[in-house]
Length: 140
Image 1 (cartoon, rainbow, N blue to C red):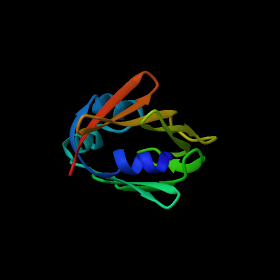
Image 2: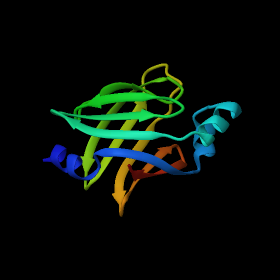
Image 3: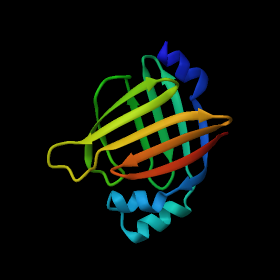
């Protein structure tokens, strides 16, 4: 049921239209000044799809990523600084929620990502410690 809901609501190709609090988020995870400025100026595309029993999220932008996962199962992942993490993704109340924690010895920080639809936009809230970044996407 959750995969069908994802397929009918949040799946698609999304173009980034706005960042809120990006610089503070990047500072919080340890990104240097030059890379923060590149990230702020860059455009991004996110493709969310359901493939069999997995969800796949491809992000194309200053740092490309491609993640496939089964809902509720812990997978190995990396933060934007390539620090190793373990992440679990769930579908709750119409929201795709990722909870990630650093692996032992990693410099990563615990992160929560919530993706949801509001009107014709996909809202992506990323929280690390007390810092929250919002990315707003429009469907292509």
